[in-house]
Picture 1 (cartoon, rainbow, N blue to C red):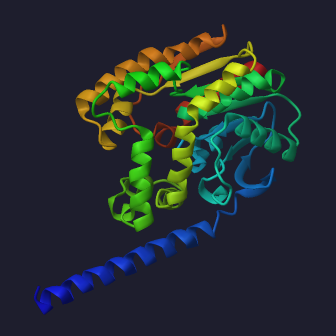
Picture 2: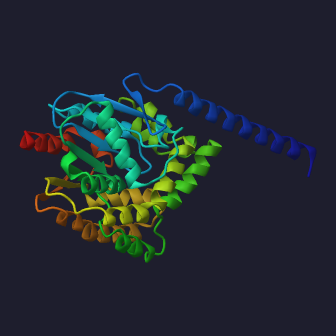
Picture 3: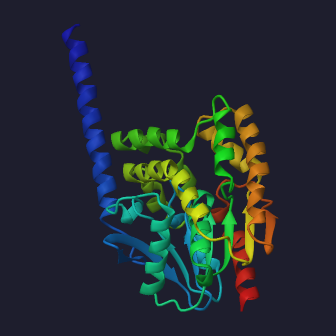
Length: 327
C-alpha cells in the first residue's frame, strides 16, 4: 500500500472521527436545551419531560408511538379545545432520556397517575394513544376504569398481538420495528443517520421541526424503542391479568393503508410484502372495536404520511367531539 493511499485513508478516518464528534456534540447540545414551553416532573425517581396546554375537563393525555416523540403531537395538542391537554416523553425518549425505559405497561400507567397528581387533575381523563402506545392506554383503562372517561386510538396494534406478530413472521422480508430501530441506533450513534435520515426533510417545514428532526439523531430513543418492542408480550400478559376494558367511548382512527405501506417500504420492506402486511393489519386490528360496545371506527381519508402534523385539525376534531359528548 503506497504512502499516498495511506495518507488518504488516514485523512478519511480523521474526517469520520471528527464528524462523529461534531454530530454527538450537536445532539448533546440539543439534549441540554429543552424548549421552554415544556417542563419536568419526577415520577418514581424518573425525570420526565412534558407539555401542558389549555384548561378544562376532561383532561386529555396523549401517548406517542414507540420510537417517536411527543413533539409530533404538539400541533394536535394546540387544536384541542376546552380541555387541558398533556403530552409527555416516556422514559428513554427525548428530554426524559436519562430515565431508563422498562417497556412495562404497568410502569406507564404509574407515570400517567403521577402526571394526574402533579397537575391536580380531579376528573376522569381521555387517553389518546398512537400505534403501539394503544397497549399502554388499554392497560390503564383496564386497571383504572374509574379514572378514564374515554379513549382515542390512532392506528392501534391488534389486541391479539401474538396473532399479528406470528403473521408478520410468515412474511419473508418484513422488517420488524425492532430490527429497524437497531439499525438506526447504530447509524445515529455513529453520526451517519444525520446525513441519511429522511426526517430532516420531513420535519423542517413545521414549527419545532428542527427539534423533532434532531430527536431522531439520538441513539437513546432507539434503545427505548427496542425495549418497548421486546416487552410487548409482557404488557399483554399484564392486560390479560387486569380487569376487562370499561364501557367507555372509544374512537379508533385508521390512516389510509397506503400511508402504512409507504412507511414499511421506507424501512426496507418490499412493496409486495408491505401490501400483504397492510392487508393483514387492517383485518386483525379490527379486534379493537370489540373492546367496548361504545366503540366506533373512522377512516382518515388523507394519504399524508404525517397526518397528525400535516392536518392536526383532522385528528383534533375527533378528540374535540369526544370532549363535547362527555360534557
